[in-house]
Length: 258
Image 1 (tube, rainbow, N blue to C red):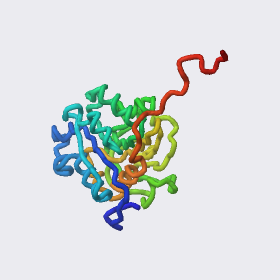
Image 2: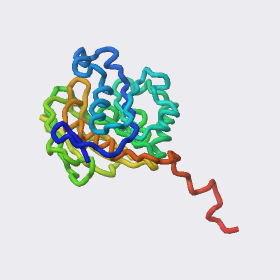
Image 3: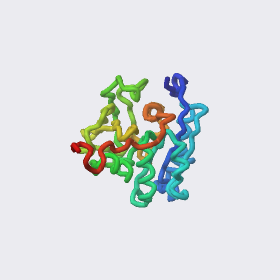
Image 4: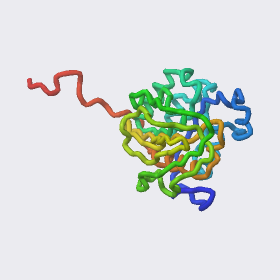
C-alpha cells in the first residue's frame, strides 16, 4: 500500500533507509535558493517525505563530509535501502566506500539512484557503462509518462507527472538494457529520456529515477515523492543475509574427468 498527501495511505513494511547526498550545493548554497527550497538539504527533504510513507521505519541521512561518507560497514550492514544523490563531487567519493556499497548491493541491499547520481561511481560500476547522457538546463517543463503501469513502482502514479521546471536529460542515455522501463520523460525541446528504470545485480535491486535537479523544488512534488517511496519499497529486501552470490565455477578442473 502506498501513501501520498492526497490519500494518506502508508506502506506496511519498515525498511531501514539511508538517504545519501553529497551535500556540496548545500554547503556552498549553490544556487543561493537551495537553502530556501531545502532548508534541511536535499537529503533531509527526501528523508522527511519517506517518513510519511514508512512510519516507524529507521530513516537516516549521510553526506560526503561525514567520516567514511557516513557509510561505514556497520551502517551498511543494517541498511535495507540506500538512496544516492550526487552531482559535482562524484570523483571525491572514496573508492573504498564504493567497494563497500557495491558488495552490499550484490548481497541484497536495495539502491535507489536519483537524478545526477546516474554518473556516480557506484552506478557506473554496477552497470558497467558510462551512464552519460545529453542535458540542458533551461528550466523546462518535464512530463513523466508511465510506460509500464503494471510495475509496483508505478502504483498510484499519474501519467504524466507534470513537473513545471526541471533540467532536461535526453538520450542517448548510455546504460545497459534495463530489466524494467517504467517511465519515459519528454521535454519542451522535443527530447525524450528513459527516466525510470530498474536493474538487478547479484541479489540486489536497483531503481534509477531522474527528476530532481538542485535548482528546482522537484522533491516537494507529491507524485515524485510517491515514485521514490514506491521505489524504496520495491528495492527493499529486509532480512537478506547480505552475502553476495558465490562463484560456482572453481578456478579450474570441475568439468574435467579424473
